[in-house]
Length: 347
Image (cartoon, rainbow, N blue to C red):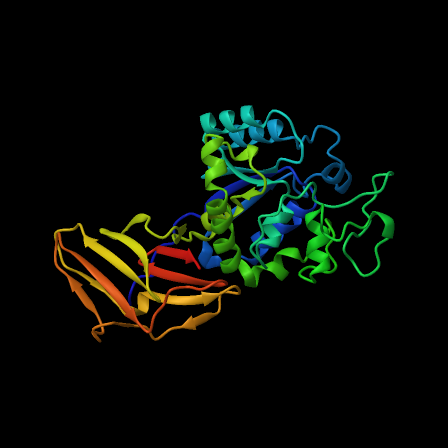
């Protein structure tokens, strides 16, 4: 009888969340959705070992400002509790001193899942590409009460911004999360089927903001909107896929290949250089078009010469054209998948 493979001890990921409602319930539901095969344990701070009052109000010693969360996560990661990864989940939301927190986190090995202006922008990316500069997560009245902005029956119609100023208003208005509430415990289950879309759209958003990021020396807390919550989820799921949005004419590297996509008349030309010491195979199935929703539009591409594959010898560069033409037009996207790499070009 074959011996059963001994399972490795589970990875333990510690999450310190600034948001004690939306983020807490999101990651609690995510944790509960993981099966045994995932072999990961998620510990959330603050968690339900605190009373409901403590968790929701942040009182009695439970501090959820970004500086306190960073210190807590660093303490756990560098202690003797067997924590493999520690993250803080924070947003900007007009909080001062973020630069110091980012520096301190790097020194302690703590990772940051950051959203600007709010975690709700990460939720929005599950449904659409959106780089709008929002002012807040949700609208409130003068008494500090949420007004259900963007819903069919807002509590205070005169304050209803219809998603112009707040992200939650747009989530309700476009019926993505029509009953959105920060204490809603079903948000993760609703958005989970759209994770692949969110991963692509989060990468798209960072690509759209690359010039601003470069201008601000990569200080993500100075950019709005921005999110890298997808990196946290990929770590939890051990998803090794690297998604990159690229420009026409930009050189990228993947699997010992250098690639450059260039526009030509009614099609595109791909130049591939094999930088390895062995032959590489390129298949037409590695390239396809998608629409705004991610639906594949053309899954039967062929190389122009009719070959079903192309073998590239070591240290050789070749140019490839496709039949039918695959230059993306407005609203479509050219995709290239090579191993763990997924490159996308916007039409």
